Structures are given as structure tokens and as C-alpha cells.
Length: 441
Image 1: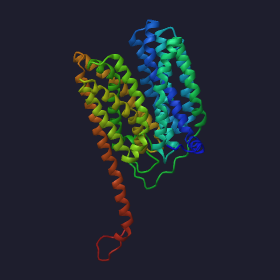
Image 2 (image 1 turned 60 degrees about the vertical axis):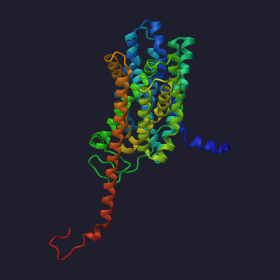
Image 3 (image 1 turned 45 degrees about the vertical axis):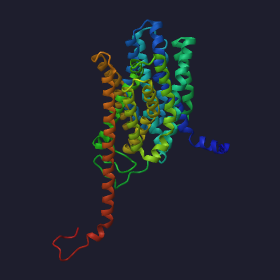
Image 4 (image 1 turned 90 degrees about the horizontal axis):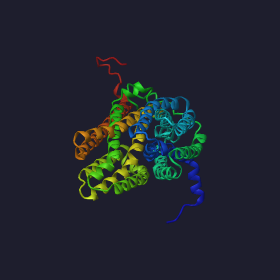
């Protein structure tokens, strides 16, 4: 295979440097707050004598408060641009998380970690970087999202081993401090380079109102968007998708061990699933170009349903491996594709605010899904089959909502085309006929 000239590679990196920097920032922000916490939770309990429920309350609190705070960061992004959002997420989030690493009191630790994690989630996660990428490359959003999430997909691959290494060598407190410094350093290029966003194209005067978006400018506000049936169905789809995904990802290991797999093998499969998400994300562009955004996401939802059914059928370990491979390849695709569709549906004018609303709803569902699955597991005497049936049902509902949303999406376009044809033919059809009783307009 012939390699491209170094000059072409350099030009490509120069053209996409801001998106690559945003992807690296994503690696750092997700690295400790999401992936690293699962590694340090056990050592925190052992070293400090704190209960598992108390330690994990900090994680849950950061996500729930982060969902609410992302609504604020989305509005600030639309009104003032990326600089205040990114700088606040980096500085304030780092300060609170660093303070949490020095806390000797469990309640103070919960408060500090909740605040630090929430600010990081609201200011540096995909709910911010995806709208920025869409605004930077409005005509090449699919390529921009692919570069962003493929680069960000290395977060778990890099930070989970680093968290384990630093925790073993220096203890959880110093591991948190070192990782915070690493995350801040690799985030700085994005924070320094993404200073402002290009202006949004002016709205099309012929665009329809009443909750129907027909141009790139987008809805005039949140209320206008929420009156759109397409937006309503899309939000319901994201909620259902996040609920099912959270339940499946968090219960994959215990469901696999219940089917007869060792916990070591199940843990290794979890790592394989995270690694496979990277090539899965790299396939977003080709799939969207070949099939279109909504059909590509439909394939992802359908494959996730197949993966859940494979885990439900687990007897031979082949089905468990198949489920993990499917989940890994598709896991990294669903959220970016949802972001691309959101950009298409919302438009650019209120994209930060509306995508923050979508992300907030998805994060709440992502937090509730594992809890609901665990509650059902307690009710059925630790039998995972009803739980997996529930998750498969939610996956099927998600796919049905996507199909409904795609049908709704096609109607305004057809209506707009019909109106355009009618308006072009109107002068010939509306000529005054002296013999007619209808008066000319």
C-alpha cells in the first residue's frame, strides 16, 4: 500500500486540527470522570473504609447534576461561543476534582466530586464538542463527527490502564491528581485554538414556522422545537436508546457470569468491547454516506437488538462473545449518529441548547437503566432472562421510534417540494378569466 506524501498528511492534519484537538480533549474529560472512576471506586472503599453505595453516589450525583448543568452550558455556547464553556469546564472541574482527592470526609468527597464531575460533564463532554464540530464544519458534519468521536474513542483504551497503573503505584488519591494534570495538559490545545465559531447562515425567508424547520438556521427557541413532532419522537428515541444501552453495558459482566463464563473472561471481553468501539466509530462516515444518517442509525439499533438476543440465548460462550463484539462495534456509533441527526433536525441556531437538552435526557436515562435492571433482577430472584427480555424490548422500541421519526422527517420535505412546485406554476394557473365568477387576487 502506497503511503500518501507527508505534505498531504500535514495539510490534512492542519485542516482538521481543531476537531482533532477536541477529540483529544474528549479523551481527557471522559478519562477520569467516566472510565477512571470505575477503576478507583474499589481502592477508595478499601483504603478509606467508605461504603460502596456512598462512593458510587458521587458518580451518580455527578451525572445527574451534569445533565442539569449541560442545559446551562448549551445556552452559553449558543449565546457566547465556546471559550467560556470550555475554560469553565476545564478550570472549575479540575479544581473541584482535585479538592475531592484531598478530602478525608465521605460527605465532602461526594459533594466535591459531584460538583467537579458535573462541571466537567457539562463543559467538556460530547454535548459541547459535537455542536462545536457541527458549527466549525457545517457542510462536512459527518466527517467532522467521525474524526471527533474516533479520536475521543481512545479515552477508555488509554485512561483505564493508566488509572490502574497509577492507583497500584501511588494510591487512588495521587492517581486522581496525576490524571487530572494529564487531562488538563492534553485539553489545552483545544481550549486555546477553538476561540470562536463561524457565523450561522441567515435564515431562509420562505422557511415554514410552527415547529417545522426547513432551513439550516434552525428553530427560534426551545419551545418552538418542542412543538415539532419530529423533535418529540427523537427525544423519546434517545431516552429509550440510553436506557437500554446503560442497562446492557452495566449488566453485561454479571449476565455473562450467570451464563457460565468466568469473571476474568467476562472482564477481558469488556475491554475488547471498548477497543472495538474505535473501528466502529471510524465506520460512521462510510455507513452514513452509503445508507444515509437515519438508515445507518437503524442498522446500529437493529444490531444492538441482535446482540441483546445473542446474550439472552447464551449457553455456549460463542453467543456471549458475539454479543460483546456486536456491542463494541455499534456502541461507538449510536451517539455520534444521534448527534448528526440532531444537528440535521435542530439546525445550527439553537444547536448547543437543544443538543444539551437531548444529552441531559439521555444521561438521566443512562443512569436509571442499570438501576431499573437491577431492581427487576431482585424481583425475579437473580434470573437474568427477564432482564434481558426487558432490554431487548427497549431496543425494539428504540428502533420503532427511529422508523417513526424517519417517516415524520420525510413529510415536511415532501410538503415543501409540493409548495415550491405549486408556487412556480401559480402565475399560469391564476390568470384572470372574465367568464369566471372568482375575482383575481
